[in-house]
Structures are given as C-alpha cells and as structure tokens.
Image (tube, rainbow, N blue to C red):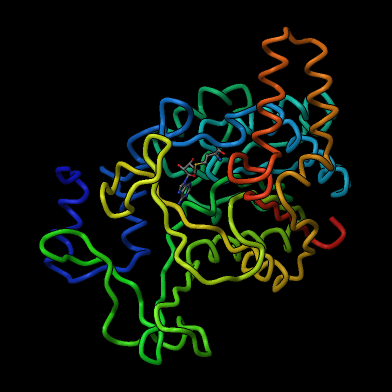
Length: 353
Ligand code: SAH
C-alpha cells in the first residue's frame, strides 16, 4: 500500500526530530489540520468507517434526552442552562434528545442553550444542518463554555483523544514511540526511562503496557471544575474498562474493519479504550458525586428503552418493527456482536444538583 499524504509528513517529521510519542501520532492522525482523519470526512454510518449508537436508533438520543430532563429538574429547573455535547458527530444524538425534551418538558426546551464542542469542520457542517432550529454555539474546547449550569453529554468522544503509552522494560517505564524501521513507521521505546511525573510507581512484568490519558484527563478536570462551580452533570458513554487496567488498547478502523494503526494515518479512525476509573476519580477530586458507573445495557434498560421500543412498534409496519428489535438488540445485547456490555456509562454531578 502506498503512503497516505499524512504518513509522508509524519515520516519527514521523524527524520527531522526523531521518534514521536503515541499521543502525538494519534493527535496528528486524527486532528492534523489538512490530513487529520476527522478534519477531512464524516466517518459515520454504513458508507463510513464505523457506526455509533445514535446512528443505530433514535431511541438512544431520546433516552439521553430523558436523562437530561431529570437532571434539569434536580438542578431546580433553572431558567438558563447549557446542554453541551462533546464530539457531536452528525448531531443525531442531540437532535433526538432535543425532540424528546420538547415533548416531555417544554419548559426545559425553552430554558436550554445548545453548545457543541467540535474540532472537525466537516462535522460542524453536518451539525449545523441537523440542529439549525436550535441555534447551536460551537466551541473548540470546553474552556469557552458560558458560566452557567450545564448538562454535558459525550458519546464516543473520550476514545478519540490521544493517549501516551508506557512500557515496562528492564526495571523502569519507558514511553512507547513511533519511529522508522527500514523506512516504515514502527513502534519502539524511548531509551531513557520516563520522568517520575508520568511513570506509575511499582514494578511490572517486562513488556507490560500502560496508557496515560493525558488529554482526556485535562478535559475531565476542566469539566468537573465547571460543574462543581456552576452546578450540573455529565454523562459519558464509551467503550472501555471500569477499573484501571494494563494493556495496549490502541486500535484503528477503516471500512468497518480493524486495520494496522500505523498503516494509513489520516485515513483510519484511531481510538483507545476509555478508563472510567480515572475519569470518576478526577470528578471526585472536585467533590462531584459519581451517580452511575454501569454498562450501556443497564443504563438504557433502567431509563426505559424497552417500553419506548414497544411504543414505537405500535405505530410501525412489520419491517419497521423488525428494525426496532434489531436496533434494540445491537444497543443492549452483550459483546462481541452488540454494544450493551462493552460500552460503559459514567454520570457525575455536583452535589445537590
Ligand atoms: N458522538 C458522535 C460522534 C462520535 S465520533 C456519535 O456518537 O455519533 C467522535 C467525535 O468527536 C467527532 O464528532 C469528532 O470530530 C469529535 N472530536 C474528535 N476529537 C476531538 C477533539 N479533540 N475536540 C473536539 N471534538 C473532537
């Protein structure tokens, strides 16, 4: 396979500056201004590289709309509140959530402002289309969100943020790097041990890999501080592990299949598993309550996805009813075929709100 335009740039960079961290490689592959994966395309859906829960069924966003409504009521039904989505993709989840909110709680629909944190110009355009009625405001990151109570949603956002990988070798932790071997991109190790600030304490077996979620931790810290200050809650849904674990979870997908993460930078999606324990701890450092830490299946079932599906099926043709059943199974059944147990849900909130 010939090199992607971004592979050519990354190889040049490595020739000039030496090997780069896995985090820098991920940041370039996903966010390079001209060739980054998210900067140049809409990757979602059948014709894209992967499908997400809101693209599988409207029920997903509607359930999240119900969750948000409940949170707004607990907040004391404020007259102004931000409903924030991180990495909103095509805007499908938000559109479905807002439709549900409009039905069950018009006063909340009146009070809310829609804020979208999105770096991709292509996906911002898609969001502008699907959400034009709601006059969304876009942000490059969470720092520019308005100073008011906020209800935050992030589905498959944290998995797209760059991670550092550390490998235990010969008595110390070394950063895993992307360099060149025979002219091709290849993984290697930093010769020097990582500084103590980055490396975990304790010993491990040679070759053990740990992921350090620097970018995701910064976002979670900023969000938690904001929620602690202004009141509100955040709902984070992603694939990952509940407890801190070891192992390399970097994966690349193109055309709905796994590919080599170094093979086609800029043209395959790159993700890692989210560590929910780390996110929950950061929220607790700001004295937020951890409300839910559960699987997607449990979360959707507890908020009533089954009666919702039954209700939709009442008004459906037999073909539509089959499609609703298939979507329900994909969202709530177990791995490996479905997302119910692989995906986890973390909800955090300011005490008393
Ligand atoms: N939440 C959507 C899309 C998931 S794909 C869904 O469930 O369908 C990941 C999303 O995060 C995309 O919208 C992508 O452009 C956005 N994204 C990736 N990295 C980002 C970053 N650093 N800052 C803001 N948005 C980012």
